[in-house]
Image (cartoon, rainbow, N blue to C red; front, side, top):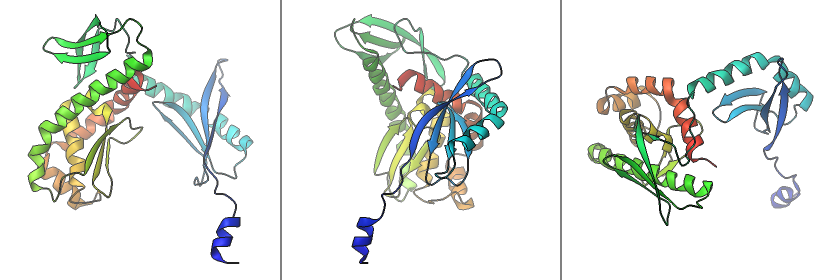
Length: 261
């Protein structure tokens, strides 16, 4: 059979499917777990992040096998969820009346005003929010995200000229995203992506991630040579990595609470 015809008649590639399952707990409550059937998965996997619990199944695994796996690991799952909740023991929602906003490792005073348009500005005495009376939650979150992006780009614009002269090239473009696990990435074409949650944490940690990704323009790996490049530009990088280990989950969870839909 000719190759094009074989490709035409071949079954469509399997895609990832998602649903949820309720896991009963000993105290009478139930826990909602996202169930993901992934054709690329090689084994059953249970994970927890700031979005909740997730069970990944290989394509041929039965649902009953997944349910049994969940039940056998329920104690581990409960402990991990409690750990994540402990990292974010002061969840906040961005809504009128909130008194402070996380920014650059601090809680900055918030001032609310009535206005015709939704707008957020940084001033000497804190963050000022102008809000129409009927502004929707979506509008509020979108405006806050734009404010955070502007603040993050201002920080990057302050740091970047310091490191560009000894790089082989500048990044092609910069994107700020809400990232689930990574803090930054550099694509093969030189496009730089950074987690917007970085602007919530201390500035030195944000600067370290920027330097880390810029060094991938020199070494596209994590070899000893790469870490020598990081060390030469940012000698205290280990302190910042420890900061993310201690506070990273809370930063990501806070950003999602404030900005994600």
